[in-house]
Length: 144
Image 1 (cartoon, rainbow, N blue to C red):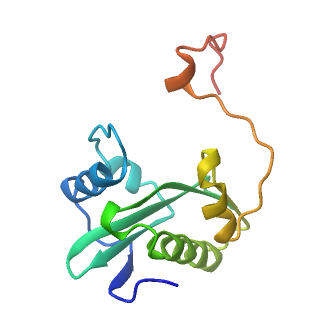
Image 2: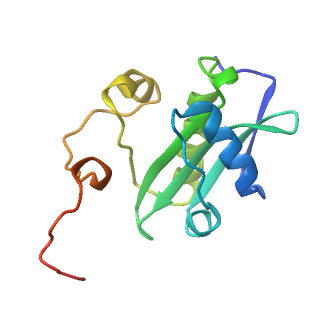
């Protein structure tokens, strides 16, 4: 059940300050970053607000074709476990469907499996190189 005091907006104007403040409440050891260049290439992003305060965010990145990727699903610590995250994902899925996306992918840590399954995602096998976890990777200098 979603918190009825929260409203959702697709691609509203949003500042780095608001996004960084939100992420800081939800992620331990969060390091502020620049969002404008990422959001300018997104298929869409959804923001959740309680009155005028940003309390949730999800980015729907895409490949320019039929695949989209959920990134940065984040809910303010005071609004977690109230349905806000699930509604953010539901809104992103709706936008993706409306824009012709056929596949939505999401990567997540094991403790988030229940959340994403509740949002309708099915577990799949996938590969991942996590530079932050493995250090530098020698990829033989290949470029596309």
